[in-house]
Length: 116
Image 1 (cartoon, one colour):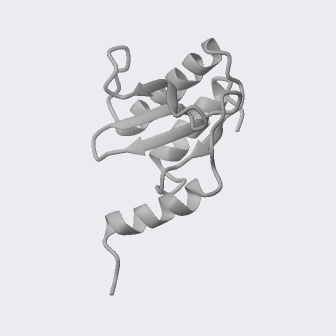
Image 2 (image 1 turned 45 degrees about the horizontal axis):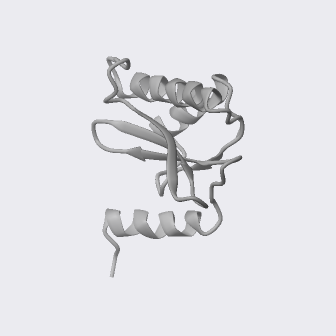
């Protein structure tokens, strides 16, 4: 029996999370993409806290296309991370393909100073 889209992504997500974890010095950069918005957060899995987050719904972020929104969110999360004293992160694509808006967000975060 074929898996639904959601079940398939859930399996991939668990497979990724077995390997990718975040610490205080190297948090996990988790990305979630909905049909309309995109969200990113830095997570310390050891303490179980979100260090900082950014999304396309934030007030300072305006974009005409979804890709531009992803670029803006990538830059915003990188700036917040650098302010919080974080330089390196482990990237968690959350079961989504590393393609399109996910890739655009990652590239923008790298350009703004994050290493992963």
